[in-house]
Image 1 (cartoon, rainbow, N blue to C red):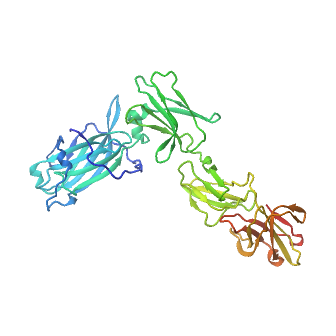
Image 2: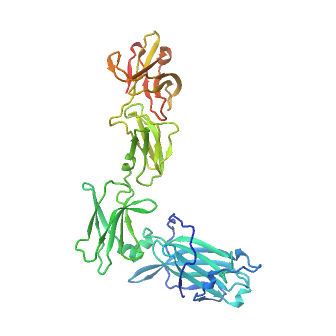
Length: 476
C-alpha cells in the first residue's frame, strides 16, 4: 500500500465540538496493513498523484449519487513486541459497480493541520461491467491519539455530487486499549499531590533518558482547557523534576495538563478536585444599585437554580414561583428583597445545595409584628422597613402537604422613615399597618404571611398558630 500526502484543497466548514463516545468494543489489532476487496474481484492499490481528481466532472445520466452506498470508519492497532502499538484508521466502503467507474479514492484530513492522506484503488475493466455491490477495505491510514479527522470517499473519476463525507475522532488516552498500549499515553504520565494548606499542587514530571522537555500547566476545563497562569517548562537537564503550581480555589474543573515539548504531543490531563462542587455555589453577588442578585458558575454545570425561602431556621427552603433557571450559565434576578430567609437553591443530578446570601452582613431587612389592635375583634399587622415600601398580608391555612392554601388580604404602604414610638420601643424605621379580623386569623392551623410587593422577588415573613387571647408575635 502506498500513502499519498497533500495539503487540503478546500476548507472544512463544519467542525464538531463534541467528543465521540468511547466504543464498547476493544480496538482490534492487525498484523499487517493491507487493501482488500470483495471476494471474486480483482483490485489494486495505486499511487495517487492525480491532482485532477480533486476537481469533479458531471456524471453520466446512468450514474446515480447512490452508487456510493456506505462509509464506515473505525480504529485499529498495529503492535510491535518492544515498541508498543501505533494507531491506524480503517475505512470500509461499499458501492455499486458501473462501467463508468474506474475505482475509489479515500482521503483522511487532519482537522488541526489540514494535512491529508489519500489512498485509491482501481477495479479491473472486466469487473466494472458486472454492476453489482462491491466492498473495499482500506486498513492503513496512520493516525495519532485524539486526532480529529475529516474523511472523504469519492469515485475515480470524481463525479460531481457523488461523494460521502464523515468526521471521526480517534480515541484518546482515556480509552483502555489506547492508554495501555500506545507509548505516548504512558510515557508522558505524571504524578501529583495537592497541598491544600499551602494551596499548591506538586507535580512529579516523568523522567526518561533522551526524552524532550516537558510542559506542565493548570487550566480551567470548559469546551477547551483555558490557562490559569503560565505553563512551566521542565528541561531535560533540570535537577528537580517536581513542579509547584499555586491555585486560588479548589474547583472541579481545575485540571493539570502535561505534555512533551514536541509537535502534536498528546496532553495528559488530571483534575484533582473533580468531585468537589461546594465552591461553585458560593459565587453569589448582590448589586445594591439595581438590587440584583447574580450567580455565575466558575465551571461547567448541568442543573437548576431557583430562589427559595425558609419559614424558620433549619426549615426546608421552598421555591419561589417563576424563579427557576438553568444553571449552566450566569443567572441574575432583578429587584430582589434583601431578606435573611431569601436563599438560592442549586440542584444537580447528584444533590442540592442552599445558600442564603443575606443571612450575614449589613443588610437592612424589614420586620413584621402581630399584636392586638385598638379596635375590638381585630389584630394589627405592623411592618417596619428601613425605606418606603409596599406590603400585603396573606392568610394561609396549613395542610399536610406544602404549600399551604393562601388568600391575599389587605395592603399597606409605609410612610417615610421617622422617629416613631411604637409600644415598647422607639424606631427610625418606616411604619405601616393593617388590621385583620380575629375570627379569620385565630382559626387553628392558620398563618399570617407578610409579603413585600414592590420588588420582583421577596421572601415572606410568617407567623402561625397565634394565641389570640394575648396575641403578640414578631417575625424577623
